[in-house]
Amino acid sequence: GEESGSMTEAGSILFVDDDPNWVELLRMAFGRIGMRNPIQGVADGSEAIRYLRGEGRYADRTAHPLPELMLVDLRLPGMSGFELLEWIRQQPELARLAVVVITGMAAPGDPQCAQELGATGFLLKPFSFDKQVELARQIRANWLPSVRQSAKA
Image (cartoon, rainbow, N blue to C red):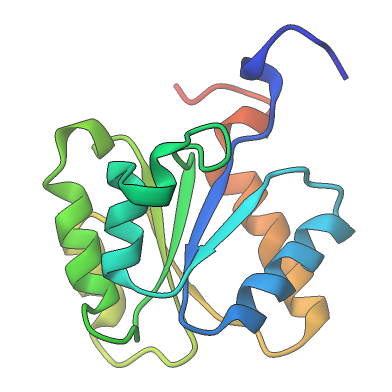
């Protein structure tokens, strides 16, 4: 690839999910479609907030870059995905961050609630690897501007 600095590098993705297997599956699915985006996994909302604030071990932005996209599981231990989303949208410096809510089981009203709280998108967790790869394609097409062909109008 080009060596013209970080602008051409794939943006990093922060995946907030208490199940590390999901994070791993998504990494594999992204790899399958040739995406180089580093995926960082954190287990819960408070950890995600520490990451976004660059606290503690996340202070090293080379190892833990601010994400270009966040995937947030709704059912998290402690703070819910909705509460995390609410917190993110209250931070002026994260106003432009794409936050896609992802859930294994959507309750009626979840997508609306996510939208009202400022989610960029709402996805259901797929249960097969093929579907996971499809999901990765969808994520790349919709929410990763660094690899998008045309700029948003």
